[in-house]
Every structure is written in structure tokens, then in C-alpha cells.
Image 1 (spheres, rainbow, N blue to C red):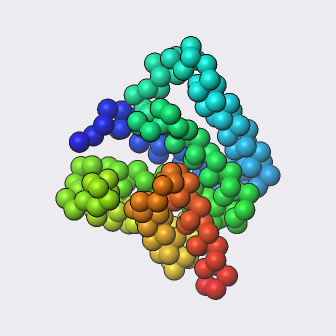
Image 2: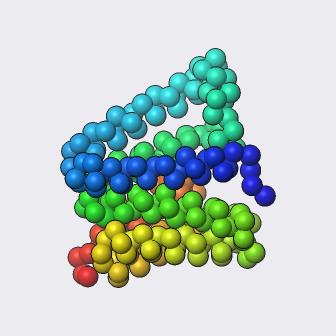
Length: 195
């Protein structure tokens, strides 16, 4: 069953494609500019997060505006947006621009397709009913198609998409917004030395 606001949440999530697309096509892979912009966005996000934890009035206003978008655990933890900005900062800082941008897109595309397909067509459920085989396949296929076009290196795209899918599926207590891009960027970076 779809949680209230999940469709809107995923629509906003897919809009974060602006980060890898902007990094490549607007900033021409200018690492310094992209890192600076993301660091500013991440800092603002952190300030908002801590302010909502510490100030009751702001806390109420925040939930009045964004409450429908938040999952239960995000009410007492950072939002997915903050984790996504953190992982984007790490990817841009430490990985090749082409790989970093692809890994960030894997998060946006793979996680969105996994959720929509899993919620609507999932039949074989795992991890206490949180993940489905159909959703994981959708994650892999969508990441693979994107990776092949983005990287122009099919073997790298296959292993990157597979890593993103495993990270999305795994029940490791770490937010998907961190697991997916960093794990896939790390694997693609190591493989790019060999391939």
C-alpha cells in the first residue's frame, strides 16, 4: 500500500536528477563549482535540520509544510534530502566526475523505479516486506540503461548498476541516499582501473 505523500516524495526525488545533469551539462564537470554549490546546499539543509530539532515553533511549522513527505523515521532523524546532499558532496569530492554523476543518478533513478515497481507490482517480498524482487529488478534495469548511455562503457555500467541494486536491496542500517551512490561510485572507480 502506498503511504500518503509517497508519489509526491518520489516526484521530488526524481527531480534531484538536476544535480548529476547540472554537473555534466551546466558546469561541464567543474568539480570546484559543483562541490561548492553542493556544500552550501548541504550546510543550509543541516541548519534547517538542527533548527527543527531544537525549536518547537519551527518544528511545528516544518511539519505543517513538509509532514506529508516525511517517513516515520525522518521525524526524529535527518531527512532523505540531507542524506542525499551529503552523499553528493562526497561523490563530487572523491570520485571522477563521470563516475560521480552516474552514481548520483543511480540513486535518483534506481531508487525511484524500485519504489514504484515494488509498490505497484511487487509479488516476491524480502527484508520483512520492505523490498521486492520486482522492485530490485526495476532498479537494476533502470540504472543499467542509464549507465550504458551515460558512461559509454557497458561493463562499468553493469557492475555499477548491480552495486546500486545490491545497496538498495540490502538491509544495512544506512540510508539508501548514502549507500547507493557511494557504493556504486566506489565499485565503478575500482573497476575503471582494470576495465
